[in-house]
Length: 445
Image 1 (tube, rainbow, N blue to C red):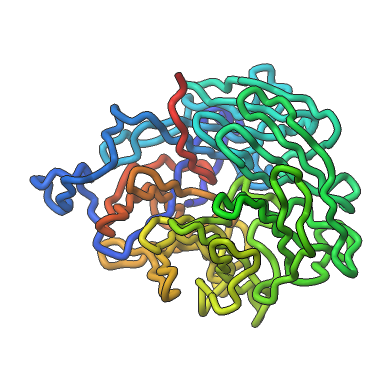
Image 2 (image 1 turned 90 degrees about the horizontal axis):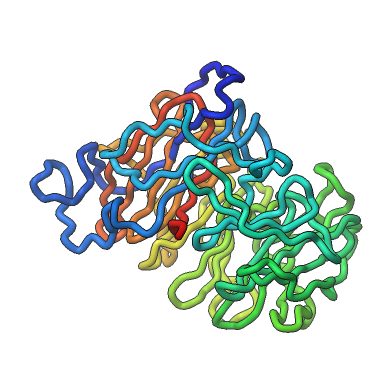
C-alpha cells in the first residue's frame, strides 16, 4: 500500500482493500464472467461460481487506519460487506460506508482475530469476560448471543479453537499463570457452556510456561483433537522455546490427553503459535484427511518455513515428508485448493522481516513434489506485499480470491480459477487504509 496521510475524522469511514494475487498462468484485466465473446477471458461453461446476485454468501473486508490491524494495532477496525469482487464491481471504499467493529454501545471492542463459521463470528472481546457470537449485517454489528465466563477465563486474541461439528466449539489457551492449559466446550447455537476444565498436560522439560495458545485442530477421520504447543523458559516476548514443538492427542469426548506428547524432530515452532488460527490459516486437510501444518525453524539467519504432514490415521508427523523445501523465509498461511495443490503465503526474509515490509508473496504449491510457482500476471511476477499478520484470501466455489497490497500500485483483487489455473483481475480498492483480512460469510436470514 502506498503511504498516504490520514485524517482522524475519517476513522469511522475509511477502508482499504488490498489483496495478494495468484496464478501461474496469464492474467486478464477484462470482465472475468467467463463469456467466450469477451476477449482474453477463458471459456468456462462449467464454472461453479454463481453470479453475485445469486450467491448465498458475501465477503467481509476488514480494514484498519494508521497501521496494520493484526495484534490490535492501528486506530480501529472497520468492516465492509460486499457481494462482488470481480472487475465489474465499483471501486471498494469505506469512506462513509462500513461499520466500526465494536458493539452497538461502544463498550466492547471486537478483534479481527476471531472465529468464523457459517453466518456468524465468535470471539472473546477486549473486555476479556465473555464469549460473543455476532454478525455484521449491513452497516451494523449485531450481537446474537453472549456467554459470560464461568470457570475458565480467556484474553482477547490469545486462544486457539477447533470445531467438533457445526454446533460444538472448543476454546483452549494457557491459563493466567501460563502453567496449565484450560479448555471450554461451547454449544455454538446458544453459546451455553457444555463443559470446561484443565488438560492433564505437564509443562515440557525445562519450561516454566506454555506458549499462549498453540494450535488446536480436530481430525475427523481419527476422531481426535491434535494440539500443537511448546514450552518457554520464561513468559513474555523474550522467552525462548525449550524444545521443538510437541503434539498432544486429545479424546474430544473426555478431553483427556492420550499417551505421552511427542517432540517433533522436523521444525521448531508452528506458524501462528501465539494467536491460534484466529487470523491466519495454519492447518489444512486434503481429501484423504491428511493433516498439514505450517511451521518454521530458525536456521541460516532466517526463519525457514516448513510444511509438515501427519498422514491420515496417524498421530505423528511423517519424517520423510517436507512440503515446502528450499524455503527462502517464513511460511505464514496455507489453504488447500484440491487436486493436491495449496495456496501459500510466505515471506522472503532477505527482503525484510518486519510486519510492514514488502517481502510477502503467494505461490501455488504442489503437495506431492514440493514444487511451487510464484503467482504472476501478464508474464510478470506480482510484486511483494506488505503485512505479515494478514489473511487476505478465501477459497469458495472453485475460486480463490486474493488481495494484493503492493508498494507502488493500487490495491486490487485477483481471482484464481482452480480448475483452469487462469487468473483474472478483479475489483480495485481505494487507497488510504490497511487491508488485513478477508472472510467469506453466509448471508444472514
